[in-house]
Length: 339
Image 1: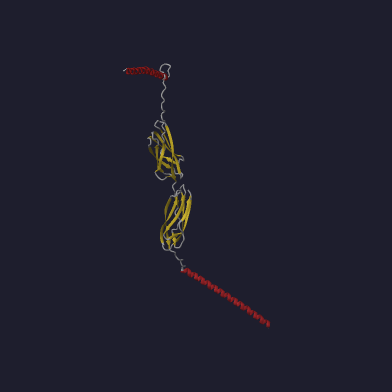
Image 2: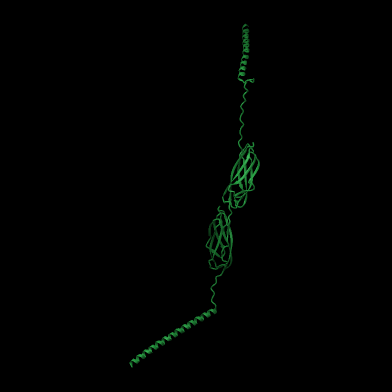
């Protein structure tokens, strides 16, 4: 019993000591904390502001020409066409607004319709717009690819000005203008004859004409084959000539065609048909001379023969009598000398 009472008293003493020691430790901790913390009273430094994370800078939205297409294969000099230009906002975070898009071709050989500019209020993030622009190639535009600039001026979602520029290429071709004079061909030919045909070609365009070729199809006439005229530079002329032989199986009027084929600078093929016609006449023998004229000629010939014969006979008689007279004279002289 005494042991239990002693054990209880010892436990009670330990608990009392623990209670008395813990408040002192808490007060010391509080005092230390107060010393470390800035004082809010007079002469005390203000509390330091907690650091804040810098706001993230948004990337600038980009506009670009995604694609473009002409409403035909190429733009012909002197003609108009429409080009559709697709503009895309590549940003996935910001819309763009107050957009001005302009077109400019450096050589000024492709002219835009109107001012060559268009305005769009907004293009949403990741969105696009299609600008249908009318363009015209001047008559003097060179036959070649023409680069043109598409400039885009706009604002981002915060109103900051931005700009971008892309290039598109439009193909221009000069039209082929090959003219010809009427073929030089006789309106009448005779069986067995070998007439010739000639035709002059004029290149009135601003691009070269290549591989000009002449082919003939005329009933009753045969040629030596096709005639190659060749290349004709801009503003120049060339003449093609072909020989024919007239057949004897088909007299009368015949028709046919001259097929003119050629190519432009890009190898595109062209053909023109030129009608031809002539009349084949039968070959006739040389006409006999008239009877009256023949009789006169025969009469004159006979007269000449008779006169020539008479003259020859007269001359022979004169010679004969002259020789005989001389012979007789000589004989008389000999007889006189004998006497």
